[in-house]
Length: 147
Length: 142
Image 1 (cartoon, rainbow over the protein chains, first blue to last red):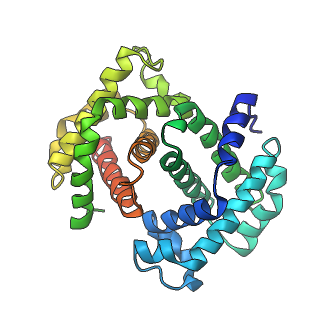
Image 2: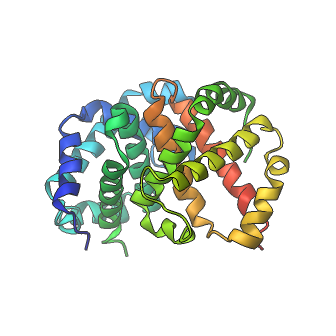
């Protein structure tokens, strides 16, 4: 099980407090779909995904990105029990959504990159390391109930 | 996988800014790599990898210089990095998984230094470019 030190928790929560979840969520999901276009396979009903600007401006992408990142916020409240916190979502992603867990790792890394671009110098190597641990923990928790 | 004309243009146009801070960017990418993925330090028992060390700066500069060679010959990255490819295959033998980790840390570093330039399209171009570089460096492994 992933254990976060006090410093790591602080690195995560203090940055998270400054994140605009709606904006960052849309950006993260949008970039996932732009940079790794095969991930669009899960979003056939999202309408126009034909170019980077279409994707980044797509209202369904923004709405879904906000949903995803809001859920990520729940992870941050439950850093000591990610598997428990994401058990139901894990079942959903396996049984109903049929999402390859590799996609969780891709999205986690895109999120880290977005945080770097928003926070610049503040996103130091050790802050990044705490976030890499968190996104890896979330990805593992979301894959935990797969069968 | 190969770069489109537009992607090459994006990379070339950003490269001037990046190479102006080449040493700092290379060093920072390595610092990020060793902080987030401590297992990568196992390839450098002969170096002082503490943040700020001279070894780190020298090695970071080397890494970015090599990327610069690839950028200057962006139409023939395999040719530009042929010697480095042999070095990694026969001497260094760095496990291929680590190229993804360093590539990610390079993207994080570039994103943090040049947020305005690092659009979704630029992100794609750089991700692809680094994937191609990683492929070239591991293509002689077996």
